[in-house]
Length: 216
Image 1 (cartoon, one colour):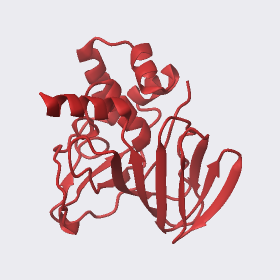
Image 2 (spheres, rainbow, N blue to C red):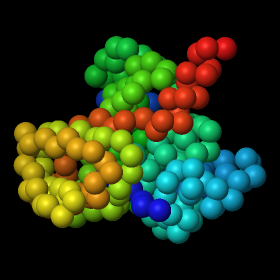
Image 3 (cartoon, one colour):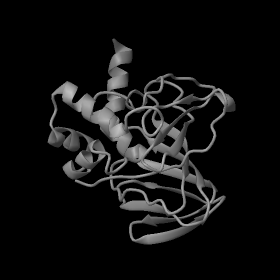
Image 4 (cartoon, rainbow, N blue to C red):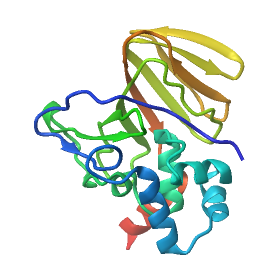
Protein backbone atom coordinates (compact mmCIF):
# COMPACT_ATOMS: atom_id res chain seq x y z
CA UNK A 1 0.00 0.00 0.00
CA UNK A 2 1.14 3.61 -0.52
CA UNK A 3 3.03 5.54 2.14
CA UNK A 4 3.05 9.22 3.20
CA UNK A 5 5.24 12.31 4.50
CA UNK A 6 5.89 15.90 5.88
CA UNK A 7 8.39 17.78 8.23
CA UNK A 8 9.99 20.60 10.47
CA UNK A 9 13.02 21.88 12.52
CA UNK A 10 13.05 23.32 16.05
CA UNK A 11 12.97 27.02 16.73
CA UNK A 12 12.25 28.70 20.06
CA UNK A 13 8.58 28.20 20.86
CA UNK A 14 6.44 30.80 22.61
CA UNK A 15 7.20 30.95 26.33
CA UNK A 16 3.89 29.44 27.38
CA UNK A 17 3.87 26.64 24.80
CA UNK A 18 3.73 23.02 25.88
CA UNK A 19 6.63 20.90 24.59
CA UNK A 20 6.50 17.27 23.58
CA UNK A 21 8.96 14.66 24.77
CA UNK A 22 8.47 12.65 21.60
CA UNK A 23 11.83 13.06 19.87
CA UNK A 24 15.08 14.45 21.08
CA UNK A 25 13.50 16.37 23.91
CA UNK A 26 14.05 14.46 27.21
CA UNK A 27 12.05 11.46 26.10
CA UNK A 28 11.98 8.39 23.88
CA UNK A 29 11.53 8.74 20.08
CA UNK A 30 8.07 8.62 18.53
CA UNK A 31 8.74 5.13 17.16
CA UNK A 32 9.01 3.72 20.67
CA UNK A 33 5.63 5.20 21.60
CA UNK A 34 4.03 3.70 18.50
CA UNK A 35 5.52 0.26 19.14
CA UNK A 36 4.48 0.35 22.80
CA UNK A 37 0.90 1.21 21.85
CA UNK A 38 0.77 -1.46 19.15
CA UNK A 39 2.09 -4.13 21.52
CA UNK A 40 -0.37 -3.08 24.23
CA UNK A 41 -3.22 -3.62 21.76
CA UNK A 42 -1.77 -6.96 20.63
CA UNK A 43 -1.74 -5.90 16.99
CA UNK A 44 0.71 -6.97 14.31
CA UNK A 45 2.65 -4.68 12.01
CA UNK A 46 0.51 -5.94 9.15
CA UNK A 47 -2.74 -5.09 10.96
CA UNK A 48 -1.57 -1.55 11.72
CA UNK A 49 -0.21 -1.07 8.20
CA UNK A 50 -3.49 -2.17 6.62
CA UNK A 51 -5.59 0.04 8.91
CA UNK A 52 -3.33 3.06 8.30
CA UNK A 53 -3.02 2.34 4.55
CA UNK A 54 0.77 2.38 4.85
CA UNK A 55 3.35 -0.29 4.10
CA UNK A 56 4.57 -2.80 6.68
CA UNK A 57 8.14 -1.74 5.90
CA UNK A 58 7.38 1.91 6.62
CA UNK A 59 5.65 1.15 9.94
CA UNK A 60 8.61 -1.03 10.92
CA UNK A 61 11.08 1.74 10.04
CA UNK A 62 9.09 4.28 12.04
CA UNK A 63 9.02 1.98 15.09
CA UNK A 64 12.80 1.48 14.83
CA UNK A 65 13.29 5.25 14.41
CA UNK A 66 14.84 4.80 10.96
CA UNK A 67 12.07 6.85 9.32
CA UNK A 68 10.04 9.64 10.89
CA UNK A 69 6.38 10.02 9.89
CA UNK A 70 4.76 13.08 8.41
CA UNK A 71 1.71 14.50 10.14
CA UNK A 72 -0.51 12.71 7.59
CA UNK A 73 1.14 9.38 8.36
CA UNK A 74 1.13 10.05 12.09
CA UNK A 75 -2.59 10.85 12.00
CA UNK A 76 -3.21 7.58 10.15
CA UNK A 77 -1.02 5.53 12.52
CA UNK A 78 -2.65 7.05 15.60
CA UNK A 79 -6.05 6.33 14.08
CA UNK A 80 -5.07 2.70 13.40
CA UNK A 81 -3.97 2.38 17.04
CA UNK A 82 -7.21 3.89 18.42
CA UNK A 83 -5.37 6.84 19.92
CA UNK A 84 -4.42 10.42 19.04
CA UNK A 85 -1.32 12.17 17.77
CA UNK A 86 -1.23 14.08 21.05
CA UNK A 87 -1.08 10.86 23.04
CA UNK A 88 1.80 9.52 20.94
CA UNK A 89 3.86 12.72 21.09
CA UNK A 90 3.01 13.31 24.74
CA UNK A 91 1.22 16.59 24.65
CA UNK A 92 -2.11 17.20 26.33
CA UNK A 93 -5.05 16.55 24.01
CA UNK A 94 -7.34 19.51 24.31
CA UNK A 95 -9.85 21.24 22.07
CA UNK A 96 -9.95 25.04 22.05
CA UNK A 97 -11.81 27.14 19.52
CA UNK A 98 -9.57 30.12 20.31
CA UNK A 99 -5.80 29.69 20.78
CA UNK A 100 -3.65 32.74 21.64
CA UNK A 101 -0.39 32.86 19.71
CA UNK A 102 1.67 32.40 22.88
CA UNK A 103 -0.32 29.34 24.02
CA UNK A 104 0.25 26.97 21.10
CA UNK A 105 1.25 23.40 21.85
CA UNK A 106 4.41 22.30 20.06
CA UNK A 107 6.23 19.04 19.48
CA UNK A 108 9.29 17.91 17.54
CA UNK A 109 9.60 14.75 15.41
CA UNK A 110 12.54 13.05 13.73
CA UNK A 111 16.32 13.19 14.06
CA UNK A 112 16.25 16.71 12.62
CA UNK A 113 13.71 17.74 15.28
CA UNK A 114 11.14 19.14 12.86
CA UNK A 115 8.95 21.49 14.85
CA UNK A 116 5.16 21.29 14.72
CA UNK A 117 2.94 24.03 16.17
CA UNK A 118 -0.66 22.96 16.76
CA UNK A 119 -3.31 25.37 15.50
CA UNK A 120 -6.23 23.04 16.25
CA UNK A 121 -8.46 21.12 16.02
CA UNK A 122 -10.87 23.32 17.91
CA UNK A 123 -13.39 20.59 18.73
CA UNK A 124 -13.81 16.82 18.77
CA UNK A 125 -14.81 15.42 15.39
CA UNK A 126 -13.29 18.31 13.41
CA UNK A 127 -12.79 17.62 9.70
CA UNK A 128 -9.42 19.41 9.53
CA UNK A 129 -6.09 19.26 11.38
CA UNK A 130 -4.19 22.58 11.04
CA UNK A 131 -0.47 23.00 11.84
CA UNK A 132 2.52 25.23 11.37
CA UNK A 133 5.55 23.15 10.36
CA UNK A 134 9.19 24.26 10.34
CA UNK A 135 11.54 22.18 8.16
CA UNK A 136 15.34 22.38 7.79
CA UNK A 137 17.14 22.91 4.47
CA UNK A 138 17.32 19.75 2.35
CA UNK A 139 14.51 17.92 4.13
CA UNK A 140 12.44 15.66 1.85
CA UNK A 141 9.05 14.37 2.89
CA UNK A 142 7.62 10.91 2.43
CA UNK A 143 6.36 9.97 -1.01
CA UNK A 144 2.64 9.71 -0.34
CA UNK A 145 -0.69 8.75 -1.85
CA UNK A 146 -3.75 8.38 0.41
CA UNK A 147 -7.42 9.38 0.71
CA UNK A 148 -8.17 12.96 1.68
CA UNK A 149 -7.05 16.46 0.78
CA UNK A 150 -4.41 18.90 1.95
CA UNK A 151 -3.73 22.63 1.79
CA UNK A 152 -0.28 24.20 2.20
CA UNK A 153 0.62 27.91 2.41
CA UNK A 154 4.38 28.50 2.28
CA UNK A 155 5.00 31.38 4.70
CA UNK A 156 8.82 31.45 4.54
CA UNK A 157 11.58 29.66 2.64
CA UNK A 158 11.62 27.74 -0.64
CA UNK A 159 10.56 24.23 -1.59
CA UNK A 160 9.76 21.96 -4.51
CA UNK A 161 6.35 20.32 -4.45
CA UNK A 162 6.03 17.19 -6.57
CA UNK A 163 2.43 16.39 -7.44
CA UNK A 164 1.45 13.56 -9.77
CA UNK A 165 4.47 14.04 -12.03
CA UNK A 166 4.47 17.86 -11.96
CA UNK A 167 7.01 19.95 -10.04
CA UNK A 168 6.00 23.27 -8.47
CA UNK A 169 8.83 25.51 -7.22
CA UNK A 170 7.26 27.33 -4.31
CA UNK A 171 8.42 30.53 -2.62
CA UNK A 172 6.95 32.49 0.28
CA UNK A 173 3.32 33.39 -0.42
CA UNK A 174 2.59 30.41 -2.70
CA UNK A 175 -0.14 27.87 -1.91
CA UNK A 176 -1.12 24.40 -3.03
CA UNK A 177 -4.38 22.50 -2.40
CA UNK A 178 -5.01 19.04 -3.81
CA UNK A 179 -6.56 15.61 -3.55
CA UNK A 180 -4.03 13.49 -1.64
CA UNK A 181 -4.86 10.42 -3.72
CA UNK A 182 -2.47 11.97 -6.25
CA UNK A 183 1.15 10.90 -5.56
CA UNK A 184 3.00 13.74 -3.85
CA UNK A 185 6.02 14.77 -1.82
CA UNK A 186 8.01 17.93 -1.14
CA UNK A 187 11.62 19.02 -0.63
CA UNK A 188 13.07 22.10 1.06
CA UNK A 189 15.37 23.68 -1.53
CA UNK A 190 16.54 26.94 0.04
CA UNK A 191 19.37 27.63 2.48
CA UNK A 192 17.01 28.45 5.35
CA UNK A 193 14.23 26.58 7.11
CA UNK A 194 10.69 26.78 5.82
CA UNK A 195 7.61 27.83 7.72
CA UNK A 196 4.57 26.07 6.28
CA UNK A 197 0.89 26.30 7.17
CA UNK A 198 -0.72 22.91 6.58
CA UNK A 199 -4.37 21.93 6.84
CA UNK A 200 -5.00 18.20 6.42
CA UNK A 201 -8.19 16.18 6.55
CA UNK A 202 -8.68 13.96 9.59
CA UNK A 203 -8.76 10.17 8.96
CA UNK A 204 -12.36 8.95 8.54
CA UNK A 205 -12.06 6.34 11.30
CA UNK A 206 -11.15 9.07 13.79
CA UNK A 207 -14.22 11.08 12.76
CA UNK A 208 -16.46 8.02 13.11
CA UNK A 209 -15.04 7.25 16.55
CA UNK A 210 -15.54 10.86 17.70
CA UNK A 211 -19.13 10.80 16.45
CA UNK A 212 -19.87 7.53 18.25
CA UNK A 213 -18.44 8.89 21.49
CA UNK A 214 -20.47 12.10 21.23
CA UNK A 215 -23.70 10.13 20.66
CA UNK A 216 -23.31 7.99 23.78
